[in-house]
Image 1 (cartoon, helix red, strand yellow):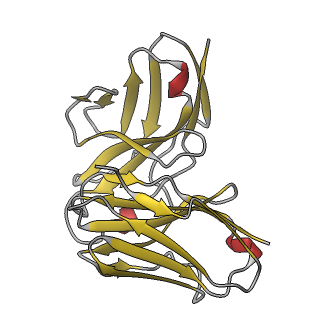
Image 2: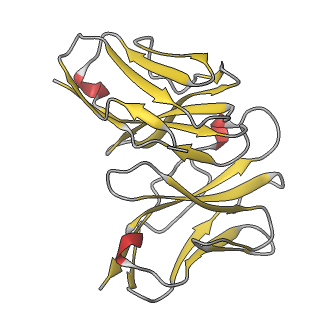
Length: 114
Length: 113
């Protein structure tokens, strides 16, 4: 079972920031938070990941709360092409049993509206 | 790099036939994952390999499914015999190491009639 909870759907106006929340209240100290998205009919696409510090790359920013029990993915200027299902995953970074921790939940369906 | 390459992109087959899905991971990646996606069950991890060795196949639904990775640049997922309930999109993904981000292929849409 996925270790994360996300809202099933969200809308965002084009050009505005999209803030996608994720709850991972049972996260362990050695687990990273990963975000992927899946645009219709395509394979999941890696976006960003982090452990406890906020992270930013060319696609998005990841804000992790100090207690690490929740995080927010921020798309600073959403476009129509950002319409997709966004998955939040917690995953062990050390040790051998990686696959069991790479579990996709139902995600959040983000609709960017013109 | 061309990314993870899967073939075929679409496959339609009759119930009872053998189906082989193919995957070429990104060059230099040491881990490979096979996933299945359906509307009912979402994305499910079937099996993953590390350095060509199957590490965990607990997600493989039943003995009709088998996966191999004969070398670092090629993997197959075989279903024999296929059944209509196997209809799904099958994704292959690879990562540099088992604990780094994975990159997905475009998937194979399998329809068993």
